[in-house]
Amino acid sequence: MHRIESLARTALPEMTDDLRTLVELETPSNDKELLTAGLAAIEAWTRRRLGPPDERRHHDGGPHGDMLELLYRGTAPATVLVLCHYDTVWPAGTLADWPFQVTEDGRASGPGAFDMKCGLVQAVWALRLLRELDLPRPAVRLFLNGDEEIGSPVSRPHVERLSEDAAATLVCEAAAGPEGALKTSRKGGGIFELTVDGVEAHAGLEPERGASAVHALAELVTQVVASADPALGTTVNVGVISGGTGRNVVAGQARCGIDVRIAVPAETARIDAAFAALRPSDPRVTVTLTGGWARPPMVPNPASSRLFKEALTIAADLGWTARETAVGGASDGNFVAALGRPVLDGLGAVGDGAHARHEHVLPAHMPSRTALIAGLLAGCAG
Ligand SMILES: [Zn+2]
Image 1 (cartoon, rainbow, N blue to C red):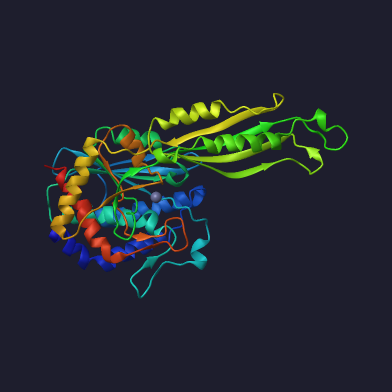
Image 2: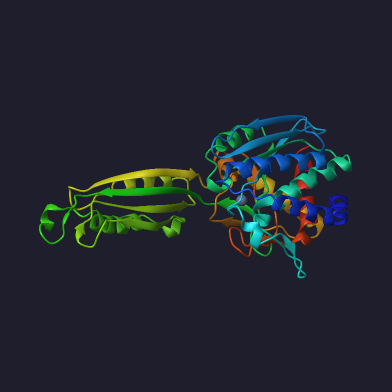
């Protein structure tokens, strides 16, 4: 993979230009029009870099971003699934006050550069260079989805279907921390909303006729938060709360939004039971829970551990030490890991600041990460 790395180093100005091209396409998860235009431009870019794919499937995303499945045949029968999402958390117009730029200290910044357009650039270049050198390689199925940042509601079944017969799934989400660690464990999570209905009444004239939804919710929030188990990695955050109509009204309704993160799959059942057991002390108050689990936790399985070991060997050969880490955020890799299939995540950018204004990429690492992806692909051709 030394040759891939040195070719990528020579091509770094072009790769950085590609990153600029992709970042300058605004693709917020909630803007169908921009997502559609962005995906068309990304597809045109893949054709410039890889030529036409051998198979192409376009999937309607409904209200969310459409999905594109591009298959490039290799020299070996195996297929590797490469997962990249093209949506970002940044709203339309962000580029106007935060244009793509490469600063003198060697950072490339712009909305979505780190999460995860740089990963897409590296994946496409890894395949391009493998083909240029005519090295053994598997078929590569590049999957581009546009709803990852909102939990992949539409793309999830596609990810599950496409990873079924894949020798490996490589997720080109950004690497973690200053060392650019690969992600072998991720928390899963759920998003819930608790709605409490009480009985409205005048707070002065006849408070006894009322049943306060606000008071009940205050009791319930402490029960919700008590269901956390930090030792197991289960955290529960009540992030928003609202209710009531006036200071002198016994509140008829109140609600709160809950974010749950879990590291252990069995915790979904325990949390479900805890939430189902929520009871306000006033029997006139009713409780409704909506929402649910968005992604299962990513727990290493033997096949995934083998993939990471291979990454260790490739990186060592390239002269650096690959590290692995567990992170709190979930990705599409979680779906694949939960099915017991081999997956390695964090193969994208080295940098920092996902979902934050200091989001940036260190382009100096792009050649070695591209070579790592190429090495993992080549490893599946044997
Ligand atoms: Zn991402």
